Length: 153
Length: 417
Image (cartoon, rainbow over all chains, first blue to last red; front, top):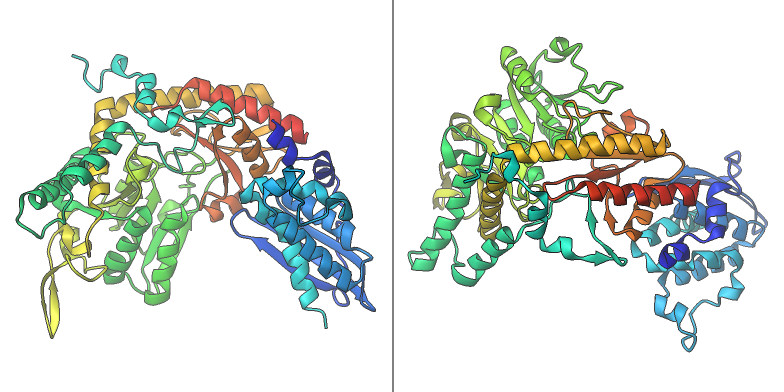
């Protein structure tokens, strides 16, 4: 079961069982953006309050598998309080994490493109890369956030 | 000595031995294949028939006069004969049109027969438990012809709600329903529905995708007008589907796809379509796939459809009972709870665990199941579900497959509990 435990780390199960930042924000002023994964039926609605270039608050609703929901919860925890520029960088880093080939994650001699120490709890999602079908589950919230940031005035 | 219909002659372990893929080991476990409703596995007889065709007699059909071309044509037409016999087509092979899959068969029904026979004021009656293949082509036809698409509701106990059926039948020209739900496993009362349709002056089309490989299907006995099914769910290859209707109806249907093979003549001022099934088989057809389907039909007939029903019925009853006992409601069955008029398709909702996570855990046990909406979103909405986990049996399934399924489900429940 080692593979399965790589995927379903305790942090992921914790964020799935007790998702952070659930709820809604009044929109406007919050930006409201929807993400949808037609293949699985995963859905997310993201609310972003952005003031003076900082993501001051963030809430989300939706449903989906543990990977999509935990990824969304971890994302919210990571970017809340960040500047928009930093949030963009976090999105890029996460996308990179999801495209790092598993060999670069496992072999000591080959440094991964992403420094796992720099991304905190998000590193728990690195096991998803070994399950290509599930990458889109992990990416849903991040693509939705990316879209929301692009819509900023 | 033992005929195919002799129950004692049927041995699922012998069927297993015929299926190369069942020898695979996945995640250090023997494969437990429970996704037959999605696509079935192929016995060697089918794979070898296709290989022999490609190795020895591949040529285009209905064209050349050299020996292998004659043999290819004979093999292709032989498959048509086998399929006609399998469903007891009263007009024989002249009523069997080969398509790509059930979806194409429904598009042929809607875009040829439907476009020629339906218009504003007419109704196509489908049900809430249909696959998208028996819904979307009718919506497309509605856009071009103004035909109304109406739905038979599904009851809380997963059956067609026929309580108000006479009112629903008003202005219906075609009743188009599944023979067996690909999500619920519910077997619909096709014979009764055929009588009903005909009493109201309508025709009836049956989606046999799930039913044909798991129960004897006799179109004369059922008294249906159209039967649509696909090769890859009946131990055959992908890329070949079947459209059957009575000769008199087929003769009046306008061509569907245009091109080579489907014509009697082409001039600079127009064309004359061919008659018979070839009118609907434009271009070089899937010859090897037809040969494979023919072999699958003969293989199923060798097993005996009555034996398959008996075997799958027993497996389904056993699985339903054990799932209930083992999980005490923590795993809910989305479909009839017992084997009355239901087949070996079992949809599950595991309390608190998303179907994709359940399927992922099951994969670690080598179990192949399908998570998702199963191309039946109206049905999913009806029961307030985004997805289910679906396990489905075939003639090669054993009670041991249910053991592994239960072991994996228990692990998922524990992990996410």
